[in-house]
Image (cartoon, rainbow, N blue to C red; front, top):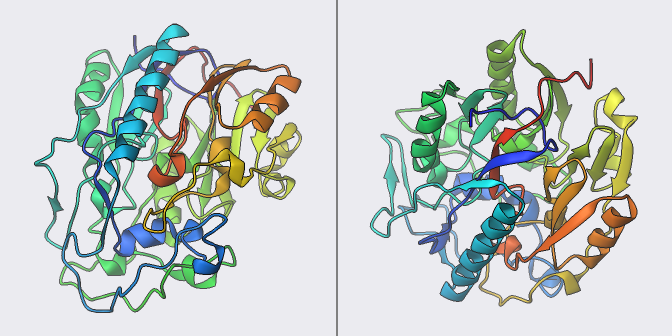
Length: 386
């Protein structure tokens, strides 16, 4: 089919499901800690409930690739791969065509640019580095160094859509030196703060100042309207680019500091007129016309919704990660089977809920919406916020 995806709820026809093959570690360095800082914020005193303790002995001296690497236990990766296959199978059973990216091969373990090097991670959260707007693929400028070339793993899929007539655009790639990052949010945010103090960036001969860095998952797509979350100057520069590039075709609505980056564990549009939100306070930051939609406020998760982990397991997401559901139609939603409270709530609002297993979402930074990139939906460029 030809690329066509304008919203989050129209009947889903084709989707990319990510891959976790050869996911062996997380690398703790500046870009990683900045990205996950809201969820790596608390110290050991809260470990028994939700969070991961501080990385010990980070030090201020420069580190090479792998110096801050946190291994992931093999059993977690095996179970994640089982859950991804189940997700793909459920989608196929609902008559959705499932596409997959190239797998990360074991020997592909490092990416290098003139300014830095980092370990490579597999293309798991495929929502992040690509924004689909109608008939156009837009590869977004990454925020984590280890994901710099992640969209290369999706190239065979993108090429097929291009051959069928899709537009295909790559936003400017950042140099991504330490000086490229806007640190103001993590230094002033009351949401938590970084796991360790963010010290002065190290100079590089490749410094160009603040650059655009932005993920597709910072956008809520509503036909001709796109709600974009901005928390840093890096995000704002990228949204400037999006506005100029999409002018006349789409309208961008800016929201500020709805979260540190991604919007899809804060608010999701389940169908026209209905939003799933983390809280009423989140809804108050949305554009005025969206605040008039019906709100389904997600139930607060409990520790019973999640596996128990050991002290050396790195937890990346907030407890609200299971709000990250995937709609396969305006009345049908895929929800983690570990969340009976959310399932019952959505069913009370007349949604058909399809429970799907996903055990280790907090270790790998994503739910069903993160793990998927919808490329073909039946909807068009409707006007919802005109």
